[in-house]
Length: 344
Image 1 (cartoon, rainbow, N blue to C red):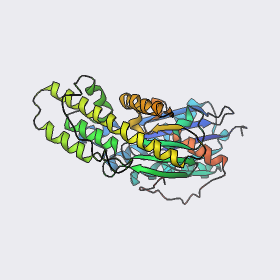
Image 2: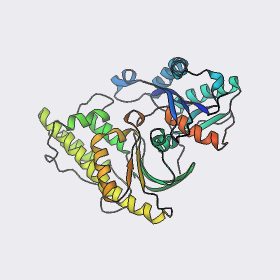
Image 3: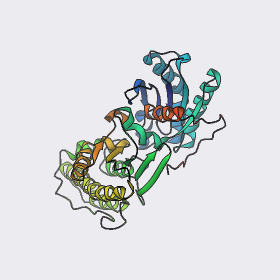
Image 4: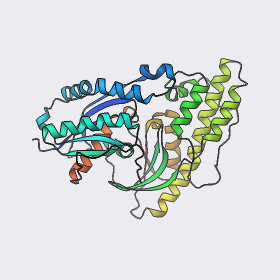
């Protein structure tokens, strides 16, 4: 057994099969020994979205291979691993079950502690993989299934300040991309479309922008995009609509984040001014730039995970596992998958 804990993390909540090994480090930032992510774009492309049964089958076919690749790349042997961590929820139940059962089987056969991890907590703690980050901090979690502002006060201690009242931001990106004819997964590609367009061409709504505190709404924006796509006749107009959508999202997040920073200051008695942005949409460069701007204007330090750690990955699951390991927070092998597991 090594002196510094090594955690093996497993993630199968949706359509990424991922396994990672990380090791604690005295610098306060763990070492990522390996982080293997296998996506299923080709499996779901023809359906325009993730098909749960196909995703689960792909996980079953790949999980042992991905785990072996992660172990081989890490340069450590299984007898050096301190604990196994696996995503327990939220996510697609048929997908969660694959990784969770694989992790339990590994923990049981190796006689190691098992740690069930909240996928959202993985995103919340993901910046700790590339920066020394102390509690408390304000978190904006923006992904395919979630959009919320949270005060992160410690491991397992979260207070929600605002959330989407309808669609998640990643969902709005994906659906807009689909309307524009961008191939699945369209959300990440929409920004490239936007670079070729005029962001001033279409005036799009900013739902609940002047009410609801730092709550968010994207359904009305998506409906407006749908209406405009029915009138579009040229490829350039598609680029213009993508650019207008990107600009509108940036403006909404700028205004709502300013409110969230103010709300956080009211409850932040330790005077810690860190603003963390995590989740798949945090990889969007235009959004990053806008959020850096509002952070610095309000005397907050903006912190993002590395681009390759924004989407679903197992290093972030291992990160939560490491924190829970050091806090002696373990789970039984009867822990069930929880498709609607909340963070707060």
